[in-house]
Image 1 (cartoon, rainbow, N blue to C red):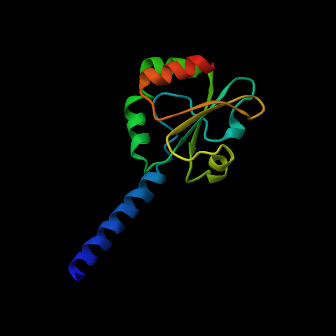
Image 2: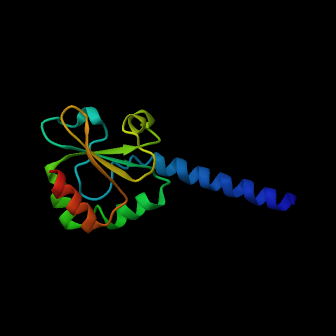
Length: 134
């Protein structure tokens, strides 16, 4: 029993260290998208897309690898001011937009009102969502 506790404690420590290192990497967001890191930096002159995510989120990491780097997604998102929202750093914004699960992508208008939202999506689903809301 004591051996299992030691192994669990070591595993938790390793995960915590990896989490801290990953969070401190300053990752501004996936792909070659001009992500803003603050809603205040996004222009209200055009639609704003808020990408709610977290470093520890498995589906978010899948989107980072498979959805965002897609050429058609990268082209379609240019119609938006895209904001990368790490919910661990911006819990208030996640609450404001009633984000219950991640990844969640929210399009807001100039007044900050929700126009549409989508959760985890493939590249083709994301392109359809972006085109419908641009």
